[in-house]
Image 1 (cartoon, rainbow, N blue to C red):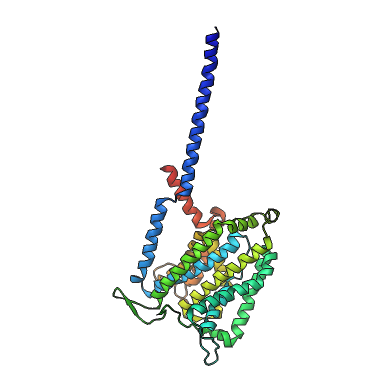
Image 2: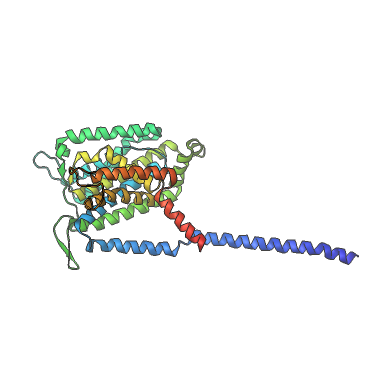
Amino acid sequence: MSESTTAATTGPAGTAKTSGAGSATGSATGRGRRARARVRPPRRTAVYTAAAGVLLLALPFYLDRFWLQAGLLAMAAAIGAIGLNLLTGATGQLSLGHSFFLAVGAYGYCVLAGDTGGELTGLGLPGWLAVTGAVALAGAAGGLFSPIAGRLRGAYLGIATLALVFVGQHVLLNAHDLTGGYNGRPVPPLSLLGITFDDTETVVAAVPFQSMEKLWYAGLVLLAVCAFFAHGVLRDRPGRALNAIRDHRIAAGVMGVPVARQRAGVFVLSSMYAGLAGVLLALVFQQTVPEYFGIVLALEYLAMIVIGGLGSVSGAVTGAVFVTLLPQILTRYSEALPLVSAPGTGGVAPGEMSRYLYGAAIVAIVLFLPGGLVRLAARRGHTKKDEA
């Protein structure tokens, strides 16, 4: 009687213990696998990244000047969009004055690197020093505005930064000694490490390298450095502080985050990114024109980060490539596309058509894909993993 009772009592208990140990072991194994998945990046992503790097390095040997220039414009836009995404995507600060800081970088380089001659003023500094000084000037301009940026938010900050564009246009059109007025001023070529980034031919593997080919590799280096730095900022403590400010400003302040100082700091950093993008744009165009740095350019940068994905470096790059290359493609193939024609021939100009497509893309992404094109790629990746 006692033995049967003991057996009956021991049996369920033993079963329960075994089941509990098995579930604990299974959960521990699952956590270990998830931890290893977080620590070890997927091999497929590394292979894709390496293949993309090799492809980008080889493109100057095969593409003509048109596509190299289009790619350089996309690189410059990506650098500027990364800076704006740090401000708007990560911190939640709306800025409509990004084109102003691009103009500061572009014209700052022209003044610092150019020589005094005729009606134009220049300091004749070495190329590397002129680039550094132009980026510093853009950062200083952002620093002067940072007390306002640290205290305003939302639409109020957007309106305040919009005023910068109009002030910048007035200065660019009237400061003839520095900017050249309405017609702009020529951009002196960059000289760095004995290499002059102009149309002087440099033969590499029986391929003549001119300004676009040389600038291609300089643009790749600048974009890689800017993307790596921004990625580190977003993943480290500053990025978590910026996200806390974006999600709940009061709670971030209660946790000890200096809200005003963080907002001001990221505004300066975003301005420096824009200044570097402006320098690269000036080197690509070889002529700065005030009309280019208007409100339309500022809105295009907002379209880049919304279409690509707010708050991520890859989203800024993806959106910049989309927004920059779309009008170039429409211009190149306007004769073969319906409703699109060269300006002045009766149809829709490529620039206007591209803006229509931007608007449609923004509406579609806001309604159906709030995370942007990068979130779409991430969803597809998770779907394939689940199927596997």
